[in-house]
Image 1: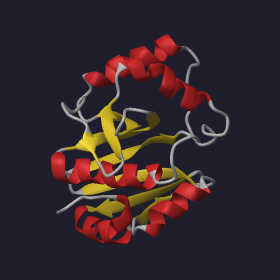
Image 2: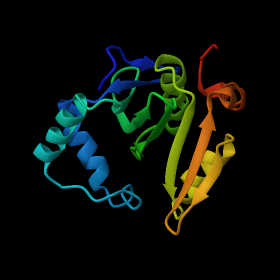
Image 3: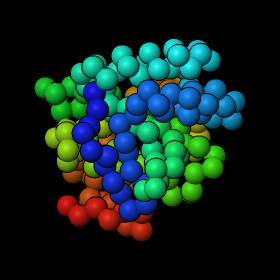
Length: 179
């Protein structure tokens, strides 16, 4: 699925990924420094285009290309596995280009939560992160996500809509969101 309009933040925007983004996305996914904690993917750009086409029509799956306000490609992120009944969603598939400005990760996370909580009407975010992905583990804990389960490989987090205003206060220099 995709949103009709980009979700614009202070310096970046989340734009529904298109087939034109396939080469950029594949480049991120194939980068050995960025794919350490990702599931393997085919190096074929046409396979990436086909995958993007398949998620256009998949209910509860939003894939975004992170861009600056001038349209420069900075990364990717997704909201997926939406459960309308429980009002939950997962988010991830989050890869930031090494050339992206330092604020891209925080601002993109804030926009993911804004999109899910305020545009899609969801209540609870779920995330799973590989234990050895220390920077992302630390980031989730830094803004108040709670660990609800662990396995040998992963840590599972939840974050609730009522916690989001506190996250906005914590990262007030990274957004212009008014609730």
